[in-house]
Length: 71
Image (cartoon, rainbow, N blue to C red; front, side, top):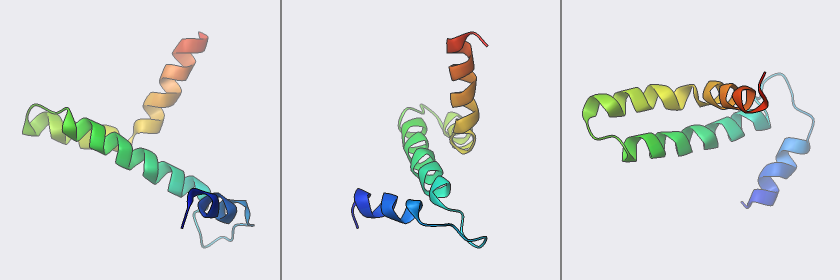
């Protein structure tokens, strides 16, 4: 399954039982953030905080976008 197949599935009409393409994109971002935070953590507790940050990474992204545009 390539990236083209992934996005073809996103273009299909979504039913109420599925999370759609957004869930897949969120999970890719979550795994990337988790990998980053755990690899840069110098201690167990900083790694634990990194796991929590990985869960809420969209909030950090939106905040930084708003700060960039001066909103």
